[in-house]
Amino acid sequence: RIYAAYYTDNEGYVQKVDKIAELGPDQVMEGLKDLSPGGAKSAHPKPQPIEGCRAYYIYAKKHEDAFPTADTGPDLSVEFFDDSSLSHFLTYRGKENNGILQQFQEFSTPAVSTVRAYWTPHYCSLETRINVNPANAPHTPVSERAVTFEGELHHSM
Image (cartoon, rainbow, N blue to C red):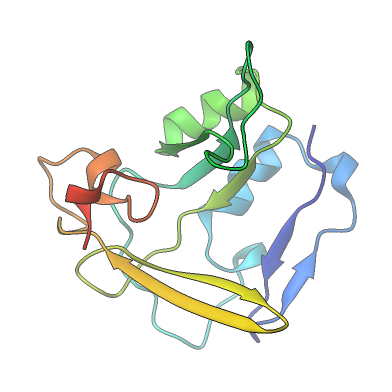
């Protein structure tokens, strides 16, 4: 069951989808196909897609014998989906009820990069990681082309 859905409108503002109950697998799949909701035209040129990656799912794995500690934190998993695997995930697969499904944003740079921010009222830290593989390298698996912080260290810098 979808708990909440958000999108960024053409002006850059985050909007919440009002009718969550009407969002089935087909509507989610259709919404993830366009960078703009409803197929609206953006004023910015559309970057090239990263072949084989439409969305990704981040969730915390369940621990059967122990709970995560403050030292280790939750055991997070990331799955990358192309169109067919996303359709299968939305329609048939069981899902953890603690995950986020997010559209993989297309890049205008040659490699995938991510900025991570930690902040409190008294502290702010920004970090960036860039994948070492070209985003559209045909012989490199998506799991090695798209990872940054969540992947093994040798896949990004």
